[in-house]
Length: 258
Image (cartoon, rainbow, N blue to C red; front, side):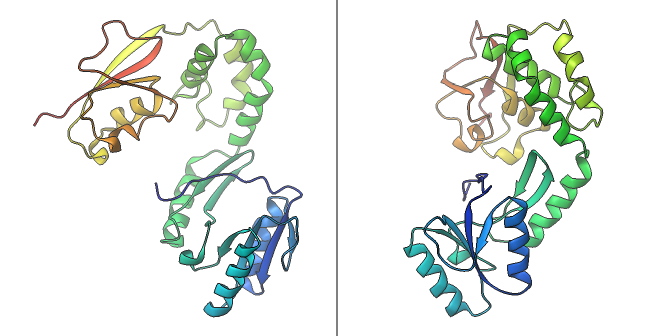
């Protein structure tokens, strides 16, 4: 990962926008959609800035001046001058999906965004809102946080009652809360690695890594494989799979055969 993706709350905050023309107008629309207040030059309350100037020397000078004021700066079409880049955005508010290439190719990010746009139903944001409204009820239904997360994961899985790609899922949240569904206490799956290259992972292996609560692996497993697991999954260095796996989904990474 070459950049850290974050979602910045700009509501009511001051954003500097230097420049005029189509590129500046595009950034202005983005800032306004996020609720930001635009000013043409530095103000004390500003924290980030966009520079949309055609002349490279002018753009560099403007960026340096703003950076000296402590602002993070984006310079349009000049990733080498940027502290941050703006991604292609899929907007299903409150769900927001950002696709970035580190400034390498805006066209590629756009193409990926268009593919994702076609996959996601227009009511996806309503599902997020319904789950948010149901938080207290879900806590009462599953008091243990681990059980609650597993229940949510199962519901949101492909063909689950709350499958995100099903436009009717927002209407099923009450049914999900009322359902008498059991949560498996523990489950162990084995992933037989083909190589140290994460691109060789099967779809099943990638899915299991993304869902697992615990990852068991030998010390020699490639870090690139482990990065495909959930960031909050517990890692266990072991020489063999656990005889008594902990609650939830555990995955044993079987080393590739030499």
